[in-house]
Length: 288
Image (cartoon, rainbow, N blue to C red; front, side):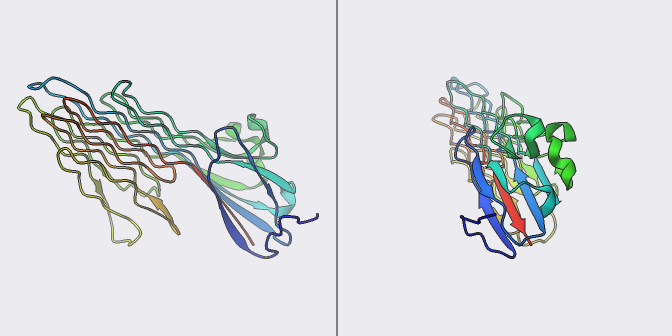
């Protein structure tokens, strides 16, 4: 094969980010490699907006979006065609006060041709759903062979994402704890109480002492949520955190997700704050 793209001839790694939900990125298989490893991350769901309501009433914060699926596989070079097509999925749009719910993240796929058919898919990772009114977004579900028929060419595994957490109804948003997944859901936004006290958004707690796992403190009343803390090596991304609510004004904006994580919920207020955007999906290709 003519290697017109001049890939390295030995080992290497490349990262692919979405262009749109319909555009496939063509990729020529590097010469000289004997095995290929792929990690596919679905887009994260957007956080929902915080509720708007009158002074003297309990108002609910927006909920965090769910994170996308993580599907990975190893394939011998001789099983793969010379050209593959990558389509990383976009993250879900954030909810806005006029139409509260967050959008669902798009699936990410590796295919043998630009196709929407599972019969042409090598690997697929579903997107997480957006946060709703009073409930966090659902995680992307683990894939099966019916989702990507050509995965039988190699050895693969698929892990469901992590759900987002709910916004607080007159109370603080619900936090989230690292659960051994490297991609996390977004946390809930803070509510506003009937005594007009703004509440904090949900925090991110870590377990263990691994230095690549991040914790994020809760956002105080009326303060915007924190955007996802993330890294590529090793792959890890928190969700966006929920914003603080405001008893007498406008709730904060939920934090944006990264790398398939969920967006944070907006804070409640007289005017609710918008949610955070879900993190875009990601495809990592490596070879040796």
